[in-house]
Length: 308
Length: 199
Image (cartoon, rainbow over all chains, first blue to last red; front, side, top):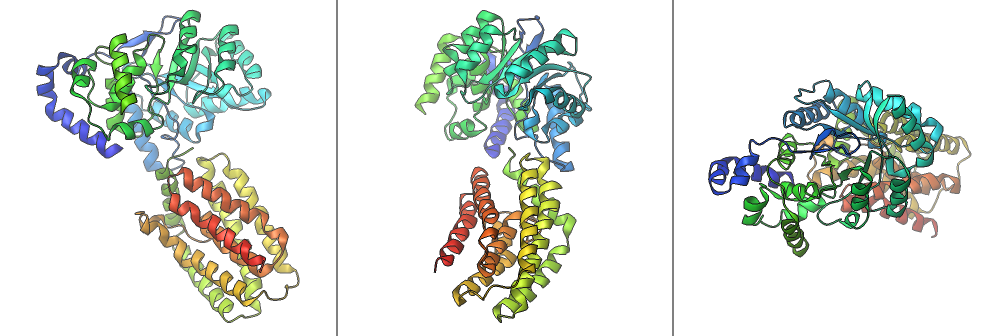
């Protein structure tokens, strides 16, 4: 996948001048501001594209790889990103993020989003504290119950932490369309600030109930698996991006095409693609710039991908 | 989960740190292969003792020291490898069973040589550099392969479960790492070893 995206990026640089003349939208995103959406419960603005850390930052004690991940985090920050998402489930990712945050260049403050992932509710606080030390942050902005594991125990604890000022936001997560019915019930009954679920141009089940419910309840939505862990992009990159995508969607490749689809849903606050490439994180952040597709264009985008 | 690149970098870092231990393992392994080929009486017991060392080394040096950093299940793998190391030791201490049929003895030798010489070179055929070669007593997969040969010689049923489970887990792990050809090797070798016990 990477060589194809690298080629597109180099071609983009070479054609930037011509594109800027031919398509105002494509030209605007090269230097436009990063668009954001408010967290409904507070009004805080979050950039439309964040950074995931599943697999990509799990590099163990490899000093070279950890440094490279830090470069990705720095590039993410320089591109206007804020929200970084991780979990104790992601191996060494949390420690890698902590090292990266020590080099955080700004301009905006990082938004630390982590998860509690342990079956014994009584051990949640201990795990959270371990995670906080690995992140090297004074407190998390957002803590989420990972994949609803022991949520009946963890959620009250997180809400208590928030009430005590130890945490700013509380959420829950699921992925790959699992447990949506239970997820919906928790969204209806609990005072959540965030939910995280899988949503992309092919996996759109959440549009039926969860995304409308999030809007109704004033819950921010983080979209995970935007690229189906890379599989979606690998299959799309066998096809040329149609010319209307650059002109009308304002994207320079399939990654931005897919991300713009996701974040153009009005219920979505932020998408969190994961990457270990500086070039790719900059490209991903490009999706948070420029105009977003409207409903008609979204339908056209979805139809294109479904037909491929 | 972790990327294949991360896993093979772990192997590479383990190899760099251990070098030139691989040469010592190779030399000892060659002596043992000679003993197995000539049906020396000391060879089966020596194999069990060496395997006890190798499995303990993988439990500590690979699973706990390296793999646990990227895979939370590695501590369980370490426990299983450590337990099997103890079982190899126990088997080595027991009176030797009557020698198995010639076919099983030769298969055990083939598996030992495969673990020592062939398996480390598989990566080259899959476009991985030599520095990422998986070595006996450093990486789990060639160590599992060597264990299958010992199972045929020792002929004790209680030695089988953990190596068989290890071969299955290895196959599954490599499959998820998009290495389908390599994923088949250990399960296939395990099935061959099992089939030979029924003859």
